[in-house]
Length: 500
Image (cartoon, rainbow, N blue to C red; front, side, top):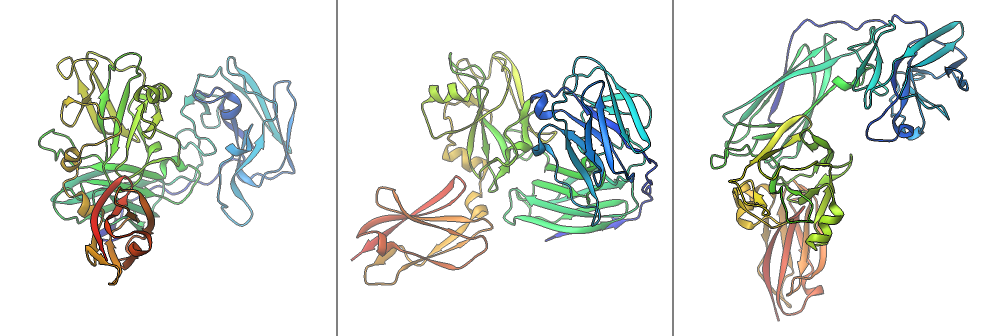
């Protein structure tokens, strides 16, 4: 890992527990999902461990018996849709951790208790599942007949309630930013030692992701050495253990933000921030919030949400691009119709209602607050919106002013890319125009005509540091034209002159 050191400190830990089970047993039911239909989300989880048989049978009360050929796995999860079945790497050449079976027409009762049986060979497990609670999983406590209502651990062990689980956990992250460097540490538990894969991203820097594997005994320590200034004050920290029976505690994935460094506004420099709040727009326009990615990296929207207000900003795989502005509303169709600006990106989130008189919004990365906004009657009079960074009235949906960008990112161009032109004047009889781009990012290089229409483009790969030929003479005539450099929605344009 570049400029990062990972050291190990000996610490006594717990050894893995050997499996103590010899028969299949029910461990978890999820009868009443909250955000999806029952057919999409409900499941039954059966623990198999090292038991072997030819077949396995499951039955809900007097319903049809579900029969399965013996799954070579440590767990069997029964679902309605095979797409729900999780991907699971092989533990050895013949055995998986998770296998899936079909519930068929069997539906889990969600308004009463129910009786279930599973049997294989001479083994049988019979349980009475209590009346469910909406959105909660029903988790078995050890090998008893007691049940707990929890968040659920689909296709994975829950070491808090199950016993005999091989579980190595990563926990107790602490971090501080001192004199331009991060010092972070986390501990492993449930095992004496392990290999941890660490990834870090200096969100304000210009180095890209840094990765390394570290052998750890007890404690993982991370030290970064960044230049003074804003670089390094926002660090994306991701540490991951090898796959085991309980993957929920195998990962630490968080955004570390330094102390307040914005002396004017008393805010931390979060890479994703709220830049416009419209808590009481003129009827019938719905309420909306503008967010802006101030970094040079795409950020996954599923990692961000408004704290205590609905779900993530989008589904996995969807990102907010570098320097992109997005509007968030609970009614994007109505908002788009009212604004009349078709090319603004919007995302739908169940925000609830924003208080017109006094209120607060907090933006979270995972479970950590990265930005917060407070308003009251003295902030701005309805129906106007306001910019939290300036505290002033604002109505520029989908747009960040040049001055505001400069305030948020004083060294933006330098951090994103640098470029050189062989000349600003190109002659029909002279040498062709060549451009060199230095960047940690893929940079889009475009040629624009005199009115700004793009006539040619290419992508300069990150760290190429080579001279690129720009076909000015092939695409344009005599006169003024432009060369544009862009990463995400940040663009820098330079004019050139074509002479006879």
